[in-house]
Amino acid sequence: MSTYPLTLDTDARILEEFKRGSRERAATAFVRRNQRFVYSVALRQLNSPEDAQDASQEVFIRALQSIDGFKGESALQTWLYRITINVCSNMRRKKKLQSWFRIGNHEDEREVAGSHVSPEQHVLNLDFHSRLATFLEALPEKQRETFCLRYFDELSYEEISDMVGTSVGALKANYHHAVKKLAVMIKDTDLYDQWREDHG
Image 1 (cartoon, rainbow, N blue to C red):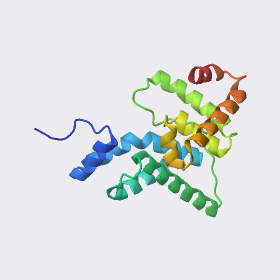
Image 2 (tube, rainbow, N blue to C red):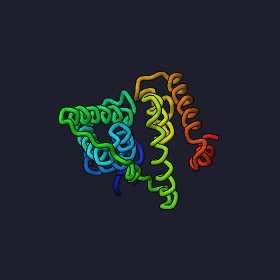
Image 3 (cartoon, rainbow, N blue to C red):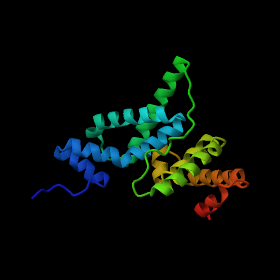
Image 4 (cartoon, rainbow, N blue to C red):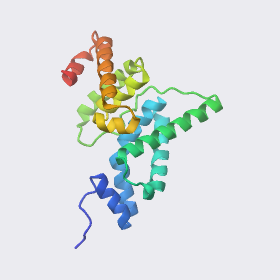
């Protein structure tokens, strides 16, 4: 009888699977569990679905190459966030040196969708999120990133604090200001009803 866990559905189980030597199985579960989060962060950093996809691949290559050195001093998602930010920063620097810029239209930004979302709901979410993204561009960077990590990625303030090195109190203020500004911007659009459902 196999002693493997039935599913690798937690970071702890995935890391244990790496230690046991089943690296291919662990790597597959690791990517599937974190691909939406990494892609979402990369997309916000690079504003291009194609570049975000390239960055995501590079992030997982780097992460899998160095995962044996992961000490568990932070959450695995925090570790991935920092790798993603570094990869995206390097890509932006490279593009500046090449004097080549391309801004995406966000049409594919939700292509890595959770399997628990129905096709119909996915279409509605895609439209809402892609249109909301145009308003997010008007927010200051810290407010925008705090809002996205909290609203889209559904992270706690404590998790975000570990990722970005900002106090929980400051993050709550950033989120509060972002919500107020976005509510004003979309109040006269058809996005407002769904916004009110999400934010009371």
